[in-house]
Image (cartoon, rainbow over all chains, first blue to last red; front, side, top):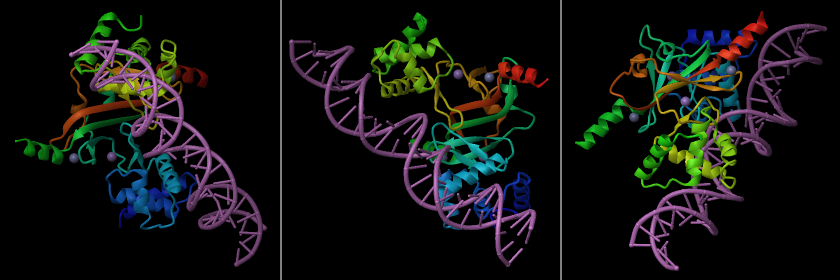
Length: 150
Length: 150
DNA sequence: ATCTTAATTGGAATAATTCTTGATAAGGAA
DNA sequence: TTCCTTATCAAGAATTATTCCAATTAAGAT
Ligand SMILES: [Mn+2]
Ligand SMILES: [Mn+2]
Ligand SMILES: [Zn+2]
Ligand SMILES: [Zn+2]
């Protein structure tokens, strides 16, 4: 059971609240994201979803991801020119991309700090969205590199 | 004069320091970026550069932009799935993308604050790069929207 | 002036994503 | 249930940004 029942319930309501339908495809895509929270690309979602819904098409995976992000159930994660990744963690957080092993890690916000306080806004900007991404080497890969160097 | 002489000098040295050549094409691309600091895309750079170097190709513009970023003279700016933009401002700063008029604004870092202090890193991450982008409506577009509403 | 290697060009190739169109399926009304 | 309307899906074509490739040109050293 990838998605806890109460989350599934909430997703259902959100979808229905928009006059949309919770189809097998949409549920399966959402389940994949909730099951392995490793920020898969659309193609990775596609291959995982086919285990449950073998007839699904890649176009439908893109459609479902669009719908889910449109409903605010999922967030799109971008990093440089790489394919988009998808994340069901709705808490405010940044992302770390390991250049060595490719993993993506969630970085939670430290309490009482806000991105808006770090940068200076010259005027009355109306912020609707922001995204923060770091890259480098993750703890595992950093340790490995340090070991091989000495 | 798009690029101040001392900057031009610095760019020359940086390029030469890497064993590369400062060609007409590379200088023209750098001049375009220094001249209008509005974060143009590769295609926009291409159309502007052709005024000075009419025979330049788009592939060369991409090559030059690659070289300049490789030398650290220019930074690549990404935002969602949009084409990459280029910025010659080497100070640490974030970007604001106006969804209404398309302009990109530099947001300087407030003194004594660092992105690394805002998010929590669970372990020994080795940060080599980070990028912060905001989107919404810029002051001009926000004012226009407020006026038309009342 | 010649030589060696870097840089440029134009076009083909690639990769992610979006679009189009016809088939299916869901849910409401009769 | 059956019919009707509309949302959704599927398959493949199209689009877009970017990269790759192979042949030519230009720099700069000898
Ligand atoms: Mn995440
Ligand atoms: Mn900038
Ligand atoms: Zn790693
Ligand atoms: Zn604006």
